[in-house]
Image 1 (cartoon, rainbow, N blue to C red):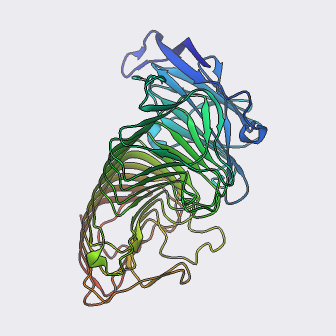
Image 2 (image 1 turned 135 degrees about the vertical axis):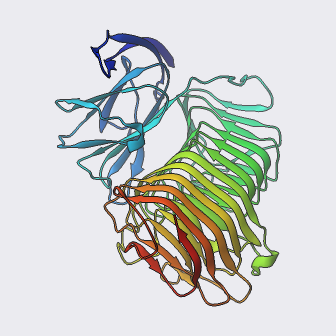
Image 3 (image 1 turned 90 degrees about the horizontal axis):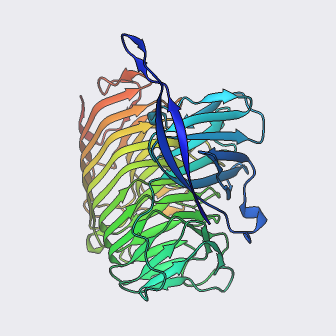
Amino acid sequence: MKITIQCLVVSLLLAMTFGCSQLAETPGTVTTYAAPDDLPVHLRSTDFTVVAGDENIDLYNGGSNSWNNSITYGSFDMSGHVKVTITPDTNFETYQLVPYSLDLAGEREGNTISFTLKKPVNVSLVLDGNYQGKVLHLFAQAPETDIPDASDPSVIYFGPGYHDLGGYGAEPTFLKSGQTLYIAGGAILRGRVRANDVTDVTIRGRGTLLNDYIANDEHSNITLALNYVTNTKVEDIIVNNDTASWTSAVHGSSFVNVTNYKGVSPKFASSDGFDINSSHDITFDGSFIHSADDAVAIKGLSHETDPAKALPIYNITYKNSQLWSDANNAIGIGAETVAAYVKNIKFQNIDILYNFDDRDHPDVLPDRSAINIFALNATHFSDIAFEDIRVEKAKRLINIQMDNTFYFGALQGNWVGEGSMKGITYKNITSYSDGSNEIKIAGWDDDHLISDVIFQNIKINGKTVGNVQDPHFTINNYARDIKVK
């Protein structure tokens, strides 16, 4: 059930030179989506109470993280200025509303935190600086438009309610060319979704696709998988994966646009947020991901053993997003790199909220970082850019590495063929992190070098990195032409 209300939010405008002006009132609109009446009780969350405008926001239990603490999420639509209040069910000393770039200081009265949203954004609440504890993720979205017709034969429509299509032995939902899968706000679709060898497919809606079971069939346990598709869209949906498997993935595909995707997959481990495998012309805009493994991973995966014969990876754009990874990397290119080449990759305007290395092996995996390129196979990387990225809390900052083994030998590499990394740019990277903030560059040998890497305007806790002699750098003998500006 949708409930649309009108609310008034009072903003105090301060004049810079002549004192206070009159109070200004800006009306705001909130649309909420009630949780299904028959939703299993364990999928509801009572860890927090949230009010937007004057309406309660139903909250969901997204599963337990690596440290067995529950992760809560909820969503609503809004326009104008909207007051939000959050009341945790436990006492706390301090709180953070992240990302910092939203500049939401908030006010506290007792155990209730209040703040005003001036536009639709994703905001998370961390208590007592404990990013490994109970966390709340709120998704405030612009009003939905162009809702498809449920009677349209090309639309698979799931209205508000709990739709259980999952469990052991259940087949995924398969989409055909030209179809739209619509999950309405207030709908929870339990199951897996597949688009294989199709074109012109759309997956959208304000509801949630949930996978909390292991099927153990030939279709894999990935919640949402797009395989060899083209001209395909994913818009607005929440994907809640409570399994130790990838959350979503696109493989062997082209011209795929993913907009306003929210992935909540805190179960340890291997629960990557959204993997981009052996694909090209892929765009992500406005994503939020909390995963227990790589938040974003760009991989070369192929049946070919020779990278030169494998599918290339190129024209990947990832922008305007928030990333949280409890293990491995927030942004990862690799480790699997069986690809003809990796070229023209751009990450822009990203808030990395949290990045930890590994629950079971903290500080013994020095190749994990907030922003990572890790090559196991001899191929060519070029024209890769990371711009306007803010790192709030991470073990390490940047890693660019060639190696022949990954995660205690779980993956083995091959450097027989030609390979290089060049034309890599890091621009306007800001770290507030209390981690090591290491910037590591490690080529493989004289025939497999890392070169032509530019670091421009890198700031670590308020100080600009001036040259490669900065103590944050670790560079081996197989790196050339490293420039700091």
